Length: 447
Image (cartoon, rainbow, N blue to C red; front, side):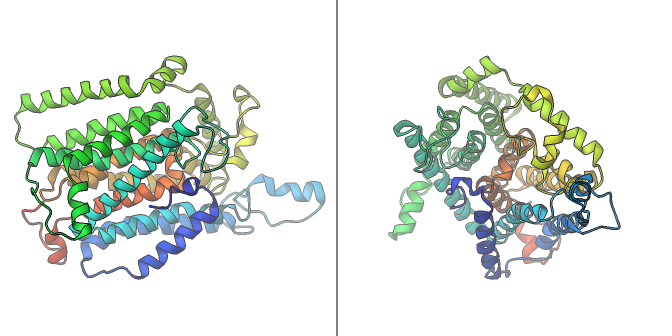
């Protein structure tokens, strides 16, 4: 809940604070509900973290026996006569500092997975994240209306006409609030479809009363509307358009396995599409205006992509070192980018991974991510009990991963932790309870 607050936790100090807290939390994890099937599901993630650690070690090793060292290490000898050990990485300590971000996301993913092995705990976790996102959205809207030039009691340096909440970048804020909107939308669809809510709270305890009223369709609709409005107020073209596509995806995943009849199913999807267009017209005026002015394709970003591909072609095996994109990009910066703007990121997480880690490491990392996405979609369509939880995970995964393919939202820890917590909890609920109870036995009728 706190990770988005300190300016998206983009600074290294906050990343390592959250790493320490999550590591301490993992030491207290209750593993009674965890079976061999859970560990098999997490095994690709563990192998990916080990792979990243091994590549970082190789990149920073002085005079490595494997791989081609970066030419930048010849400069001290040529200019100063100092014999400095050569490395694959352009910097000696940069990869170890940059390792914090993937480590933090992995820890958040695993901790949420372990918490969400119990279905009621998964529901509570997603409910807490949803209402935390609602509060961030309320702050972002009110801050933009009351004092648009301020970002957490300091002067805004960019995106002065748009809401960013506690984030510096509006695109990350849009993806964050779009993900939070999905946390309200899918339970709202479930509540409307099932219509089996209790008329009265289960008890008179304050937490029970609060949980009962926050789960009403009216409360869920308000949460969805506020988070969607905040998304639109960012003015992010990709953020709002991909969020609307994720809303449609969530609705399709929820409706598809239901016995509605072909005509009714397609009629509902067509109606949802019309509603999405109306939402874009009504609250996405700033986004629509930017699309009309600048179009959907950013020419500068395409030029940066071509330069990044050139770096990959020169350093295909082990990259230039994790976290060293900014250092490497300066030598490849094309003239069409001009002298304005600091390109410290590739604005495409997979492409930046290829630049910094090399293709042999990037391919298994991307394959692991896609395998988890497959598991989320499979659980969304096949799971019977609490199917809405995998649907949330699949739609949030689609939104976050697609946006990070053309930007860097997942590289900002404030959103990365939320993303990992949602998808980790959803992945845990993709497994049928029978696999945990029977220690990995045959799949029962729950799936």
